[in-house]
Length: 614
Image 1 (cartoon, rainbow, N blue to C red):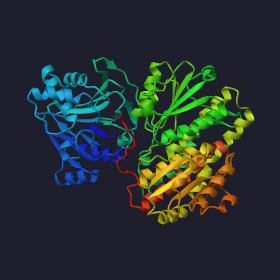
Image 2 (image 1 turned 30 degrees about the vertical axis):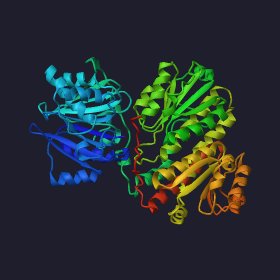
Image 3 (image 1 turned 180 degrees about the horizontal axis):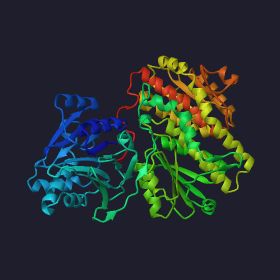
Image 4 (image 1 turned 135 degrees about the vertical axis):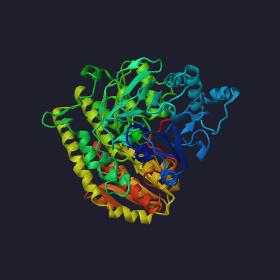
């Protein structure tokens, strides 16, 4: 959840660090701070609340220097106070530390330090790390050795960055476990550290990623990596081809708005170079599973969290229908605790935007231990999930997604899942060339169809005004659009704070119907598919009980229009691809409702973009 930025070079470090933290605001945080090294002394500034409060503090008390670290914190140990904000200092003031993750055995280590006479200023586990590093540095006589020895005493998933005031020009960074990512940005006469790529895109696109148990020794002129035991590690730099401008709002009021409207482009980028319509083929160059391995699969587990889990539910419909393989979809946070059956005929698919969500990474590790291949559907190139995906990876190529509420990445996840389902169906002999061509042509039509939906926004502004005092909403869908009902409800609740529930429409009479009255708007997804008549019946049942119906329908549908209070039309596509289109109006509805209610659209309360602690 928290954000990390580090810099060493010739620029003013304050400017680099603060701008990087601004790029990471989407991760969610409640306090922020920086430490700049200048003339052998640390200049530390911290504040609670938004980054703007820290910037105000820096205007009042500027910092100067060419080396520094910064952090945005989401409170886990200790309350939201300035003294608990990062960076944290060792007792002598020689060492400062920032950390993402949870130090599981910190109380044990803290107790030993207190017995040795260390006095603590904060309630955080991070301060314990600073004191540990200082103790081990004194014992070994060397900062790097002390850093390494301290990390060997820490349990839990963490990303840690440290500086020593008597060793100018040096930053140390480490990754322990899967709970915190570390990316090193490579420059000319300068180098960068961050917890996520957007923080450093303004300065470099050449990066390396730390793996579990690795340390980076960073100076302005060089970066070298090693294991915790000091064994050297060779790292191959990667080039991130995101345009830095793509991480800015580009004239839109919010990142979420921008990302909703980027979907025609992002879907195109997901499809790019992966479709051969004439040959009736899907081309997945990064898939490492042979055709023989794909044919041998008889069970697929999909693991994901939040919006990605909804994409996983859509993927289940796609894979079972097109490739005839049984699929189970699990919350990543639950999979590890239910003793799943993993064998040689099983495939795991992990779906994650950031590739750093710990609840998704842990099942991937379980699959690796069981010898089960894992396919990643991931947005961030080189992320931990991508590296754990020994069965290959389908990169979404959606570019940075800054808003906490995922929009463009969700539709790209669904498109990527469709590509894999078609590939699997082709290899397993479930689809002939003509059918494949039909689906591939339909996929290629999606970007323009999404663009058509985005041309009409006035209706969502009207609905936002109409429902700005609404407290509850129900979303209904059937078949492959049931997950879209779930996704629509999630979007509305997480950014507008209107309580919303998504339900399979066939279950309406098994409970939710008791809630329906004139004060409960009901969103019904009723496109023309094999359950259309059933959805039409659900609309009638809602109206009979005084409910107000907002219907998502195909263009030209007069049957639903005659019954619903509000109708929103989407173009027609193949039923299995309809979620890509039906979700867009629900994204717009949630955005405009949040906007009308004065909510923080891009950074909803209590939420973070990348959940890196369990």
